[in-house]
Length: 456
Image (cartoon, rainbow, N blue to C red; front, top):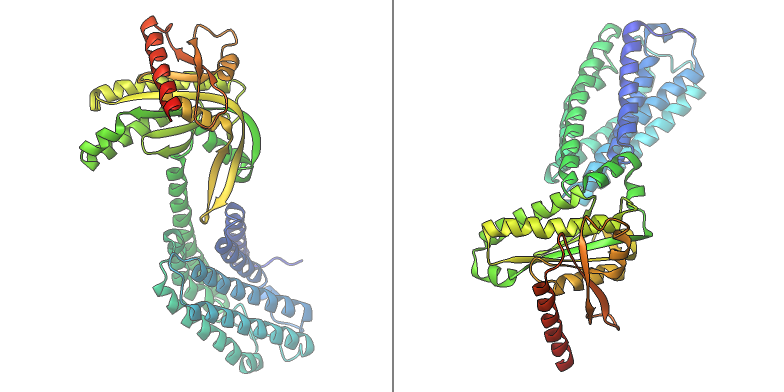
């Protein structure tokens, strides 16, 4: 097969390669798929647009292929605009979307009629010697008005996009293609020597917008990484979002912590002071959680729920949870001593089987963890005194496999906890052995709690 001239070959390779690259990088994005198909179709058509493919005896197959590629490029470009209209922050007027549909329908009619024409009357479809499309004068007379109707419909629809708040990243691409469009379309009619130049200019403008689009999407990804532990972010990057969010049953550990005296503090302080304290508290707890491989599941007021063992699995999840909770209590107490000495912090830890994964709700994905360990960790956190970490027995059993030098625990009297039929065996955990005074205080509080329950 004869290759096109170098200028046409280079432009064709650039356009086809650009489309394939963007299709590969962002294939789940419907608007990206549409614009990538448009650019690929133009690139393939440019490959056959050099003088060496023109003119000569009518080639029915070649002319039909050319007509099909041109039609695909136009349809995909219109489909991209329609996708923007349907997914804007504020939906476009209904007539705008319908005008895109009408424009596509008219172009489909144009493609079918021209396809039939070049097959049935190849002699009449002999190309002129100008432009990529090289449609004969007779074809323009027959099909020009049809194509013009489609273009007018799309132009009207594009004006309707002005009332749509287009996604910021998509808007950059939309603006760049609007600027590149005249250069790409002019190649249909210009003399052969000018075609590679105009197409290259149009492609460079489009690439500028596409690079800006990917940069904005990358900044969004960096922003979202703030809400994930480094391990989860790495898992999403290496294994994909679907695997990371797959629903499954796992044995893992849960840590719950919250502040003591926060309700009175928030009632008596300006809201700006309360928010500033929470921000520093959340940041510190998040840093500690990431250090131990935990994933922040929820922030609720002054409470934080952390999963250890999901989405990323750890064999030593129980030990990580214990050490994490001790660090949280110690470091948060140090923070509070500087910002709000009247506040305290406590934590609860529990281990067991949970169902974790993503569920759909309110139009978005939510990562959930459902099971008794979540409730138990929360109840133990409620019972913990300032500076205290309470754990269920299972966590201690799994975490203390010959690692007693890293933390100490002491069995306390079983606790009657809301939502549990029987009192739960509880252990107090600390870096150093629990002092007798703490144990005595713990027992006094247990008796007061039992008295309140009996009176209730």
